[in-house]
Length: 507
Image (cartoon, rainbow, N blue to C red; front, side, top):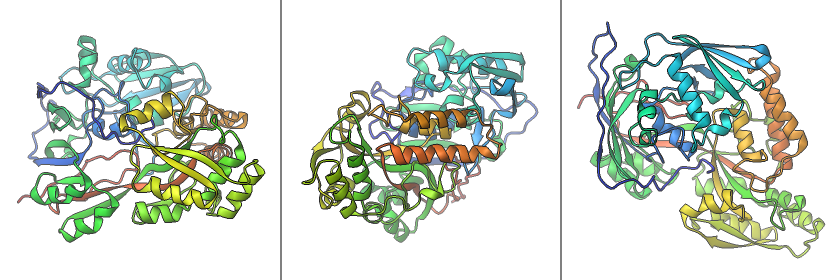
């Protein structure tokens, strides 16, 4: 799956699942008075098991119940999480982590180095694991003591601290998965800021504050409720009625939210809108035709119309300020229908081309893209499919030529580049990767992230992909939340929406 937000949650039993949660305050600590329960209008994850999660956007909800080995700061740089420090050795083929002392899971079992070892190897070896590909270079995990473990690698890989900041580094209680591995999908046991206590499939999840969380002093909410979001047009009313305290809204609802007295947070994210292009299907097997696409779209007009101008025009998979963003690419593909038609003629299509434009939601962006491409001689017929078919048709069967999509970036820049440009990348349905890009991937992997040459290596890989692969990047989009004024401003992490420090004022 490309990582776009799932609009259809995992189909589970219709009954309410009541989940027993345990775990008291750490020894020697004093219970704190917490604020009330925050109701978050978002989307329920496809599963509560990070190993089998099938959507990149799941990481936001999963971060409520799981602690990860590392975290990313607001700029996307790895910082301490469950581990306070890490150090590479053996030329980048091993990395030793030091855990915080006294960690426990929400079920009361110890979160020590042995538990982390089992959790990592489960992610690598579990039959249905969807994070196994990110752990393929992990040969073993060696435990040196309760707080120290070393990840042994088959090849140098300096991206591990990035990878361990997301689902790949979320530590699941071995006590839970050894007893019932599949049961973790509905009964998660982690060491995050909250514990899941009740789940109503496709509707909401109720969580309560985890007193054993290592940074519990910065978690002011007594409870948390993740509520599946309804139609965008009804969100503002839901916030006014108290159905939600915080909810994601589309740009079209910003003015209405402000007029209703709500606060609006616009938070930079790793999400970029894109046209997926299959270079294995004619006429897109001709590089000049795919290049014509890049000149045919008017990104600014698309941003202004579909996003009400909220976001930034972008021709690459990373947002401004990210280590992988290459400033030299700005303005690379200006809107130029005449140049697009010239490229089509050079490709042997002087009279233009006819192609299907496959989408599950024809209104809005797809219709605008259709009109813009027509001006450049690329005549499209919108082919409507069910939302549930998108991943299967585009990324599994690889039989869709052109489709609008959204890419939710990954914690690791190399992982993100591999998803969109790698030979097995989900968003590279044509399955072609230039040799020069594969060589640059290796350079990124083998360069320490604190090396001055690292940023240059990542940006060069970005530039090769943008210039030589068919993906048509359109614009970056932020996360947009409307909130009741009693809720304090939300943290602005670029990768994951966290709620550390968030408070609800007393009525």
